[in-house]
Length: 190
Image (cartoon, rainbow, N blue to C red; front, side, top):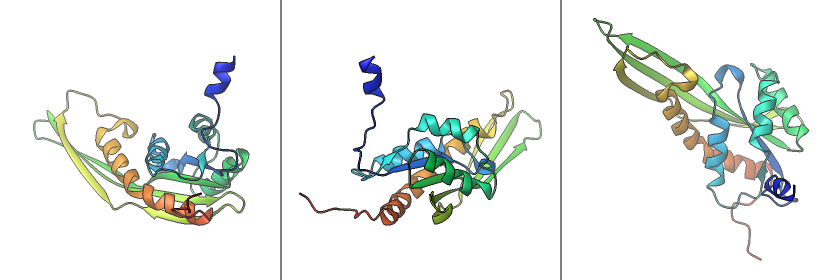
């Protein structure tokens, strides 16, 4: 029993604030965006803030109204539930996929246009304090129509562009959180 509890221990010290990273808004949700963003953010060395466990947040995403304008209010409520002063909501604000078939219909070109957006939400006031967008990203692939077209959530071009977009916004999201949490990027030693 002790080993199970030790595995659940937070990786941050008790005095560090928590941040809730959520996939959304629902209409621009691409599964894995929040997990990818959190992993990218962790690469910045000491962040001086921690993260609400992702498993709990994925459950809450599925049981909350993260659609349209209500996404900000819902994200704030979810963050407050876990004692986090801020939520980060990440998803696509532009996502288009076009499929063009060859004349013999044996091949298709799949073209994707995507832009990732991350919003830092103040949980106490349910307001967006920072909004960061990636550049408009585009990609395509040529493949046989013998295989079924994957859903948007499993489309390899969508997932590659999602990762590129999330990588692009991660530094600005960390900077925004440092700003609102009054954290200096390089605190004095000792």
